[in-house]
Length: 221
Image (tube, rainbow, N blue to C red; front, side):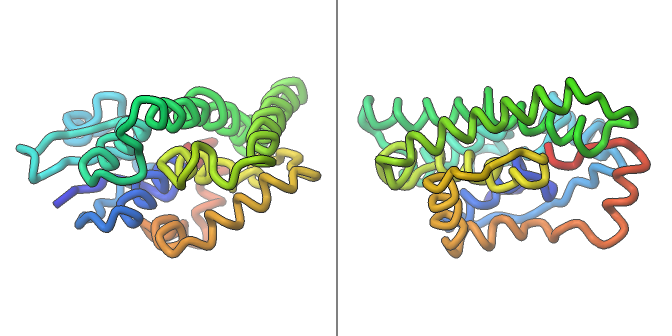
């Protein structure tokens, strides 16, 4: 059994979508970001970085795994799915996973902060991150012109990138004209596991958005 500590954010969805795809048994523990539960001592023992998601594998001597990319690799290897075992295939998947971890996620996350939550609207910062977000989405679009999925068969690379790329509108990024990207977003988004995983935990309730704006916190992390 996997204990999943998560919240309704793109990084959180990555773990729950993978768990749903792999059909691994897991129990959800919602971490309340508005109350800074991710900074409490009990959670820092699981995830020293104080960020969601994190997992504890009860079947592996309560092994704790933090960082969403590391979680995806761990779960895929545990189940023997969504990550090739041959050197070349594994490398291709991990390259696109790192593309999301080091580029798409951080840039779109910063676009969210400056576009949505910053108390002072700084045009240069907003434009800088939205332009970089657009550039990264264009990289995906160009690659997907000749590929159904990012690294051969459907993999954790698709899941990781989809969870972030699908939030382009929230980040205020221009995604017009990227037809291959949008076709891939729809293709992944139609998967039952993607639908189920993105609904875990339950979406933010009405009124939460106003609380976020007042505190200046970004939940899309």
